[in-house]
Amino acid sequence: MEFIQQNIGNIVVGVIVFGVLAFTAARLMINVRKGKGGCNCGNCSRCE
Image (cartoon, rainbow, N blue to C red; front, side, top):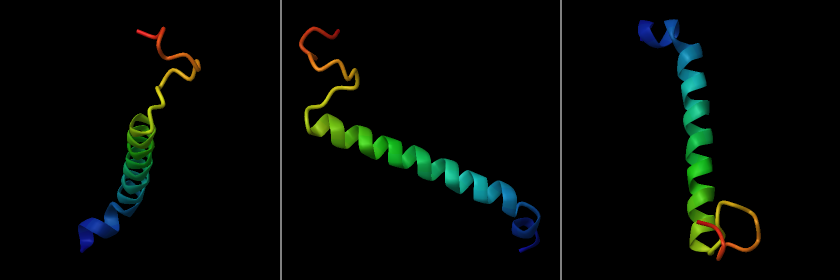
């Protein structure tokens, strides 16, 4: 319990960073499944 109390700031920041990364990965996967590319050019047939 003492470890958690001494490192609560690091734990909170780690959880927030992990949440942002998880959200970003989920949005990327959803966009790929919908057929949207990552380039946002509107013409992915010419993207390499």
